[in-house]
Image (cartoon, rainbow, N blue to C red; front, side):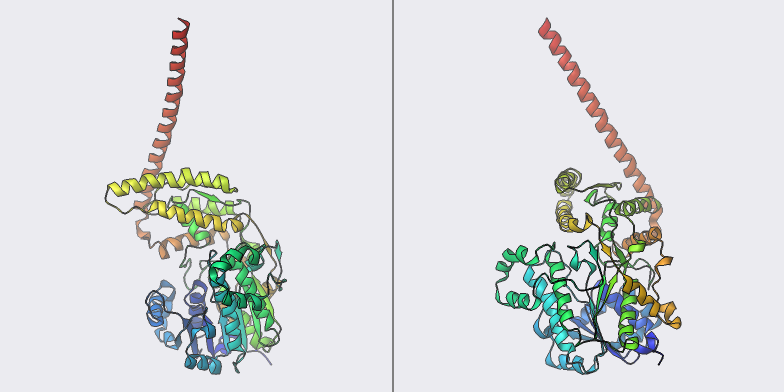
Length: 501
C-alpha cells in the first residue's frame, strides 16, 4: 500500500511536543501548524517561569516574528495548541493526573525536544532534566495505546570524546538507571564534587546527561517506535518561515554579532577547524520526515533508528566564518559599535587570558569609568567576565573538529514523496555557506539586537568615524613610543657625555 504523504499522515493526529518554548521546539511547532494544517491537536508541556503561567508565556511566543506568517494567514491554527503546565525535571513530568491521563489516552506522536543545554549545570540538575525527564516520558509513552512514533532530540556531541561519530549507540559512560538513583539520593553539593568522576572523558554535564538519555531511549528499543535525532550546532533558519530567524546568542551568532559590535576582539578557536552547523528549519523538516517515515513507511518499526543531522558537506572553517562576518560588517555596519571588528584568535588559554585582559577588560574598565562619570550604568566589565567564562566553557568545542557520519540522515530525504518535496525536502546542494552566514548575521541583528535596518547609511558613517579614530589612536601611540625611545636615547647620550666630562 502506498504510504500517505506527510500532511495526510499528520492529519487528525494528536501530537505531544516537549521543549516547545525552546529554539528548536518553537520552529518545529510553527512548521507543523503551517505545513500540516489538518493536525487535530498539539500538546505543549510548559512550566511557569519568572511568575508567568504557561498561557502568558505562549502569548509572548505567538508574537514573535517566527509566527507572523501564521498570525496573518491562519490565525485559527493556534487554537490547535493545548497548553499543559508541567516540568520535565519532575517525576511524572510535573503534570496533573488529569493532564497525564489525557496525554496517555490521545497522543500518537511524541517529539521529545526538551533539554537543559547549559554547559555549567550542576550534575544533579542536568541528569534530572535530561536523563530522568527522558525516562519519565518513555514511561508515559509505554502507556500510549495510539503511539506510532517517538522521536527524541539528542545531539551529535553526546559522544564528543570520539573523533568520528557514526549513527549508532556507543558504550555508556555510566549506567543511566543507577546514575538517576544516585542523584535522587545524594546531596547536589556532593555530586558537584564527584562530577569529574562521573563525566570522565566528556567535557561537561550537558554532554554527559545527553549521552545517558540516549541509553534511556536505547533501553526502550523493541518496546517503543523510537528515533534518536542528533542535530549538530543548531543555528538560524535558512529560509522558513523567514530567513535568518534566531532567538539566542549561542553558536556562531553570538560570536559574529559580538565581533560586529566590537565587543569581542579576541576568541579561542582553531581557525582551520570546520564546525558543523545545522539551520533550524532544515533540522525541523528532517524531524517531521523522520517521524512520518517511522510510522507510515516502516509501520512503526520498534527497532531504534538514529540520524546524525549533520551538514558536514556544506560547512566552512572558523577562519572563513570570521572573514564572512568581517566582510559583512562593511556591507552593513552595525549600530552603536564600540570598536571596528578585528579577527584575533588564539588556541591557548594562557594567551587568551592576556588577550582578554588587554583587549577586553582594560578597555571595558576605562569605558565603565566614563559611564560612571557621565551618570550611565557601567556594564562592560561584567559583560566581558561572562564572555570570558563562556569562551572557556566552549573552548573544548571551538578547538576541535569531528566527523559525523550521516548516511541515514541523507538517505532519509530520499523517502520523501514527490508531492511533499516543496514543503519538506532539505536538499543541501542549494545552500551557499557564504550567503547563509550573511543571512544569519543580518537575522541576528534584526531578531536579537532589534536594529533598524533602514538606517545603514547612518551606521556606516559612524563606523568610518570610529575607524579613523582608531587609526588616530594607534598612530598617536606609535608616535609616542618613537618619541619615548628617542627621548631615552638622547637622555642616555647626555648622561654619558656628562660622565665623560
